[in-house]
Image (cartoon, rainbow, N blue to C red; front, top):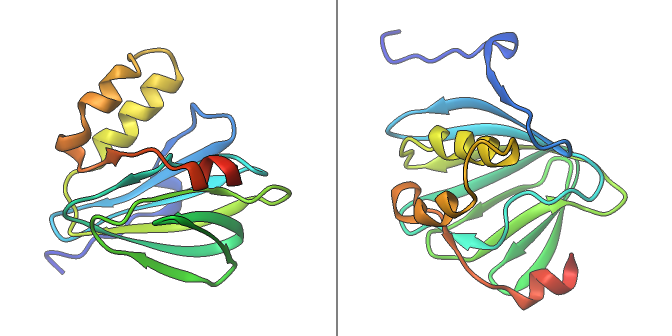
Length: 153
């Protein structure tokens, strides 16, 4: 039981600065990082980016999620599971006309909660958006341009 982690729903940290999304922080350990994100109708999640070290797993708990996967835009529905390997550009957001409730897992984990907190502070006007770009190497979140994603969204 020493390495067991239990996060009770009512005790999980929730980031609520974005009026169209709530990020619930679940686990941030050496082996994995996990959060649950809910997006309102058509709301954007993350812009196009890739990770050099982590795979990102998506499990759609409810709703419909639109996902950029390299240069293709796909739609995930309730119960769908996707693993995006390192270096693959991706982005995501709720599909137009639908909300999305998604469990995300990164493996290996790498102390990513402070990245989500930075995004929350930027939304609140408490941090400069330039800090996000400056943190790309620290949080292994590297932003890219994607005409396919721009056209789809």
